[in-house]
Length: 398
Length: 99
Image (cartoon, rainbow over all chains, first blue to last red; front, side, top):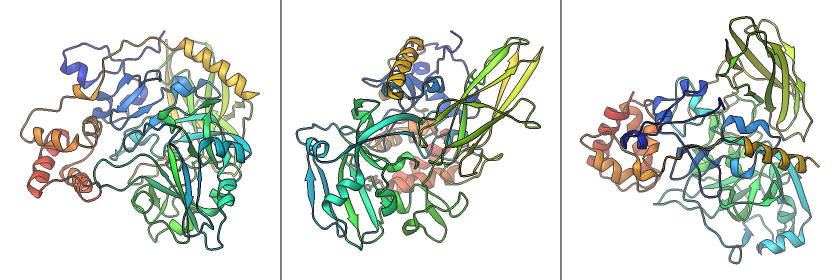
């Protein structure tokens, strides 16, 4: 198995253990300390993932696991800002309130499931900071490679139905979502808000199932927001409180964190949170990823290769994927696998023949139905978001 | 329909996963570089997070960058540090984990 991968840990080094370490192509782009401090580690109930930080747990999915249409629950990346809540269903309630809610409501999970129609959506969940570790120059934050994302079938009830049950006043401008996670010291609680149009979208869910199973604690048991098309910062886990506000929410995690320079990545469509200088990060940018053969593989001379990859965007769907084997001089269309829904990623395949010797550089570029396409050069931004640079995968031929 | 296929393929994928030689990994084994200020760094930073955050974010920030990070920990997240403690921490981080 040539994909055997060991990431040496500072822990192992300190203990004098010799852990064989094979550099992946991605590791040469990450900060040296990020490579040194990463290790394959399994959280309870999960398979081994790339540990970026232990506490709070931030674990990344190895790219090889993106071969599947849906990412297995035990392979799905894990990302928390604070301690992971350990909730019991008997005590859990979802509370709905706020200045622009006509009535306050409180629901046990069974009541949510009984009162509102169930809805399922296939959607990519991608951390805002996915690929931050590949930024050049590097920026501080969790140094993710390519794997702070996954695709799943999410099942739950529509946020709209629950909000309508409480009743929306005409003054409603945003809905906030708060989870059971809490800061260790006095820091700001992790609370996010959505504009009304996104909160009321028919695909925005209060989900309690992921790929046909109840959410695990790592993914927000017993219920989380699912905000298809938008980065995962809005997909609040271990959800306990919704509030309908008559003015923009001014919490740290909206006003200060998760911001991008204004108009650099297109309009945010979240005007109530825009400032003069910047906007909240919102929709996922069109992107693609080569999965197999992995970019550090060696190809046999004249071998016919079928390249497998994925492509996704913020919800317009993938129109096409083009690939180049000559450094971008000429491009040929890849074939797209089945469409699993506009918020899902889509697998693609590209056939080519390896040269007689030397190396070959593959490039892939996705185009979305809204006409947007991946960028040729990184768009720098302080927090390291929206890395969707056209990938160059180099294969040795031997 | 696609869910069924997804589960089957997930199962297949799980069989492809090679066993990992487990490093009995946990945050207590993270060893920061020896030097003045290390004890303060360990005590202060580990109140809220594991120390791999420091190693992971290196070498990225210079002294001014680490100063900004530590200030954020104090002013936003409430790290209970005196100005003297903060500057000792910044000096250590810049020296051992600076760019």
